[in-house]
Amino acid sequence: MQQPGTVPWDDLDATLAEVWRCLGVGASARRSAFHHPTIATSGHDGAPRLRTMILRGVEPALRRLRFHTDIRAGKVAEIAANSHAAVHVYDPGMKLQVRMTGLAVISHGDDAARQAWQQSQPMSQACYGTRPAPGTPIGAGGDFALPASHSPELAEGEANFAVLRITVETMETLYLAHGGHRRAIFAWEGASLIRKEWLAP
Ligand SMILES: Cc1cc2nc3c(=O)[nH]c(=O)nc-3n(C[C@H](O)[C@H](O)[C@H](O)COP(=O)(O)O)c2cc1C
Image 1 (spheres, rainbow, N blue to C red):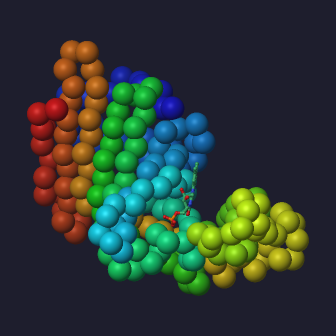
Image 2 (image 1 turned 30 degrees about the vertical axis):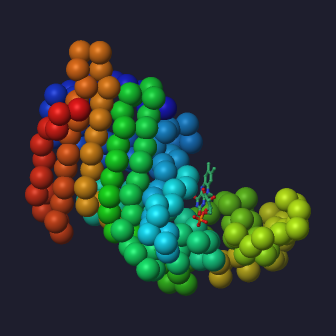
Image 3 (image 1 turned 90 degrees about the vertical axis):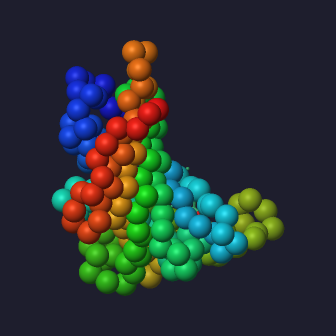
């Protein structure tokens, strides 16, 4: 949970700056609601698919959010077919909902993935050695194997490790207040902010 602070929620620029600040904090603060947003993709049947993911990094200047995932996960194939994604956060302490849309890109076996892998904790790296692959039907709940945290097999998980980056194209905020909610929308095209306005809540 973020500290509510004294954000001037009647100011569009301050609202936008506050959301990027919260995302930046969320990338490292485990207790922040921004640390574990919900990510939406489109399934192969066109229906939405949602899942929680840990926010690993934020590049505000590029409007980019970074996540880690397994190349074998269903979402990776969904993104390959349709790169449109959405991100949702609700921070109850701040009474703030943030909804974003953007384009998702997967990096696998490249410098970005290598660097992120090297910066990951052994405990996190172990997840990428899951056998069989995530989503495979198994006979009983425990019928899968993970490499031990400091075993040589841990390194094999790197082949499954992928970085998912979402470049934000629209952001909608909803701040809940007794005196009247505040809803705002921001949109970008390339590097340009093309929309910045209040909406009726
Ligand atoms: C708190 C929490 C954090 C999670 N973090 C991640 C994550 O960072 N990356 C990831 O791929 N899956 C993460 N998961 C698992 C996903 O929510 C999802 O179950 C899994 O990735 C399979 O999704 P898919 O079949 O849509 O690919 C997390 C789940 C929870 C509950």
